[in-house]
Length: 150
Image (tube, rainbow, N blue to C red; front, side, top):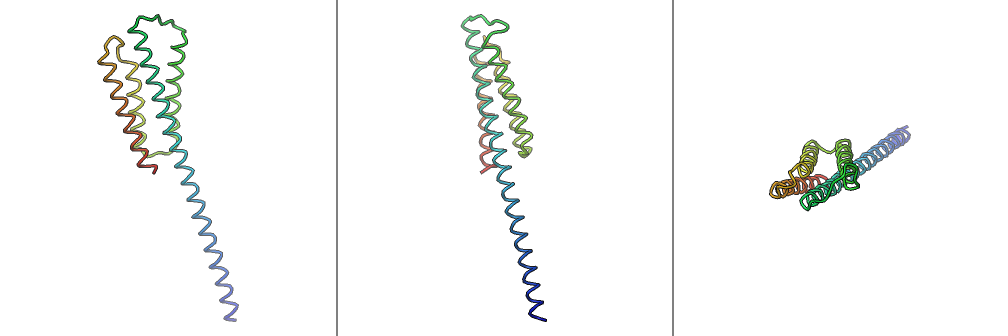
């Protein structure tokens, strides 16, 4: 009778331990997938913001050099596509589940990148200052994300 009781208790403990191990493995795997998704979303935003700023700088250079800017030109379409990519990437960051402080840094980066395009093209100091602020916002998000997702 005691042997049977010990066998039953051992079987139950084994099943409980196996279930707990599977649960921990599942939770760990989910955490890894979530981190990978967050890392990918932040990287997508950083890349999109860089491309957007580059398009805005090219716009300023073209305007300063007196190049015509038709309403439906390829350059304008490229800038709109870059802005759309930034918006989509920001949405991906927000939906990825990154903490609030990273979301705030992401919003700051987008605002700073948009400010580059809003600076008056004929005011080189304003464009340079907006670009510098955008690079600072970029690095702030990149550094914080690297620390959080390490």
